[in-house]
Length: 226
Ligand code: PGA
Image 1 (cartoon, protein in one colour):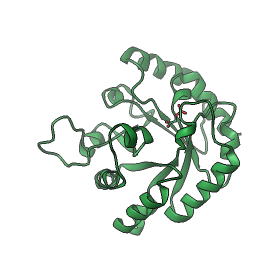
Image 2 (cartoon, rainbow, N blue to C red):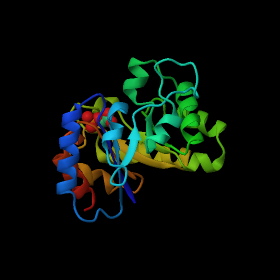
Image 3 (cartoon, rainbow, N blue to C red):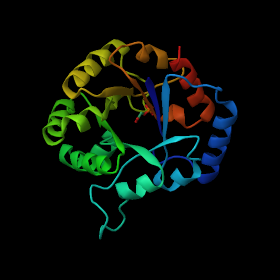
């Protein structure tokens, strides 16, 4: 089973999301076999997706439980909205919002408490420390239920994906250390998607820019099947 995850980031309006959903539903292949498709819109757009038709992910979660934490969105709230996955520790959050390995660990724990699978984003510089920290704090079953996404910042939104052979080497190391599934993200397109999925250590794709148009995202799904 290969994963194809869409991260809309802070993009799209309500109307655009509604058009995206219509376009996706009317053009999707009748069977999407061997693939888990996960959509990660903004918190405020999660409710627009019919829960029966889509697997949903959030782009962040509070490191706190329910309580006096103004502005936070808890794992419990996300679970109620039908969220099964959450992207954590994206390099944009590490860079712009000061997220450390410790903070990511606390978010991982909150997510797991509500049966939400964390998709932990890592880079070459931090994957060893992040995975070792998570492994030291969680039981074996939880460790194997995580997903990691290797996302080199030089490839994010630049149109310059990392070489598939280089990604394979890093993904292999991440998999070895984490015993978990490993995705790749960074300038994925319908043209290059299958090049990455041919590698045995790469279990799926995390797509941002190319997911913003339903048709393009569907092409990635189609090509990822080949
Ligand atoms: P991109 O971003 O697909 O726009 O390169 C990937 C990501 O940030 O997850």
